[in-house]
Amino acid sequence: MKLFALILPLALLAAPVSAAEPIIGDWLTEEKDAVVRIAPCGNELCGRIAEFRVEPDDGPDQRDVNNPDPDLRGRRLMGLPILTAFREDGRRWRGRIYDPKSGKDYRSIVERNGPDRLEVKGCIGPFCQTQEWTRVK
Image 1 (cartoon, rainbow, N blue to C red):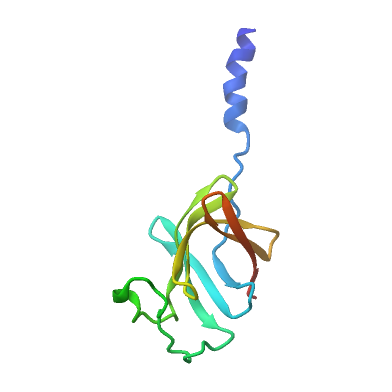
Image 2 (image 1 turned 90 degrees about the vertical axis):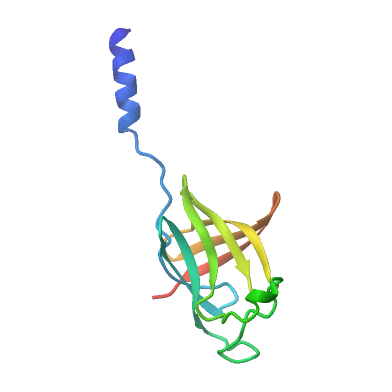
């Protein structure tokens, strides 16, 4: 019995920890209108608009006109961080997602769904809307 008490803690230390799969890279949004580049931002991950696949209504120099903060409405959408403060949480990544079309910010959960798919959720309370992004090769 004492041997078991000594071995159990060692076995637990040797057990693999379920970690989130890496999400760094370029991802095409579900609507296929933009590529978001996810990269380290200090100790966290963030995602910025890296490319437009469909030109915005006001051209490639489109500004963040729907932002509720008047001081931020002059920001260019190209390069705008839309995924912020993402940290690994078990098999998932948690942070914030900004929707420049609505000007709203949501709690977000991101998880790999195979090698080339990313499940991106934007949530208000317990309700989430899910999109599937595709890795750009």
